[in-house]
Image (cartoon, rainbow, N blue to C red; front, side, top):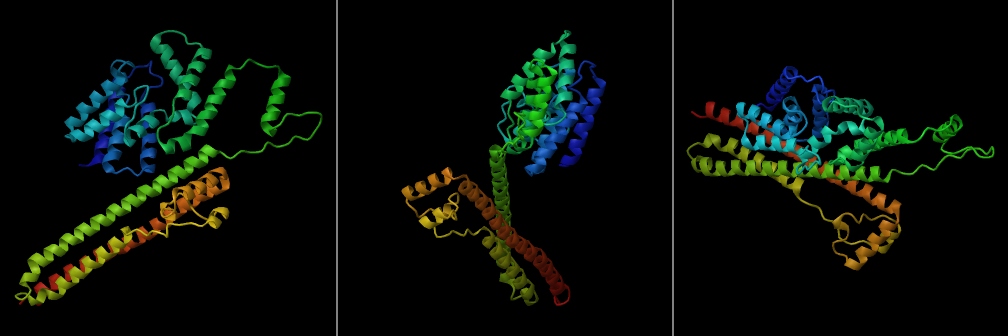
Length: 407
């Protein structure tokens, strides 16, 4: 199934449908919002390296997620959007499980959001992506304008700001990447809304506040202003470590899966060669060399694939000096699995009380994952190269053996 072509057809269908059923009251929920959600979902999907089917699910759900606005407005639009996607996809002979996944992604955007899978989380985050961007102010104004037009009444700016702040404060992004990318700007947007709610001050007070924001201090008694001590963004740092570690773990899983595929494929080839060809080699002596070549290629490929997945386990113990010098990584089981619980707990408590030790351990953990990944992918590359070039050479050898020496 050509998923790229299907996504393009879905995009064309949604654009045409929105154009034909255009409602001038929808200043926010229109094709611009839909295209923004599609773009955001693509960014998130690419970060999480979704496979072809999952990418299709996320993109198609993003295109259809608000189409229900065109036939009935906001109430129940998610269910209508899911039904419209269902009708379109069935007409394209898309598999039922993919249709269900797309509908679940659309329905997950209902407030309060309730995503259950990574695909659903991506679509939910993409739907409210603008909360953490510089476009928020303009998009929020359009949403207020749309609400006023649909309800046919004037909406007070003050009450709209309060409701916007309340909604944004209870909303949270579901994926680690979205939190790392958008939370800081989202909080900044909330702060801007809160400042607009504050009573106006006299010009002198405003000047003092502006000075404080620029310098980090208030002028007092002619003293030179001192710069505020900048605090480390702990949440951002922890999110970076979590995302890095998660990405490395996914890459490691992918490498293991690739190695298992190579082992299975080459094992099947060896069994076929032994069962079908070696029994007849006495009659077909010209096939001996190509058959031996093929088996050697398979065996070498399997060896490198096994090496890529074979674990290396350290001694499993650490010394008290390692803790005192902050050299051991207590986050990796290979450094403590032979230690007693009391010794390990003592080391962990000391690490948690020392931020430098803690962050150093996190750095070592991510670095260690990278080193292991580098070794895995190097061995995998050798395995794939041996298989690819060896298979080509074996096939050529078989052709030569049959055509030249077959007689």
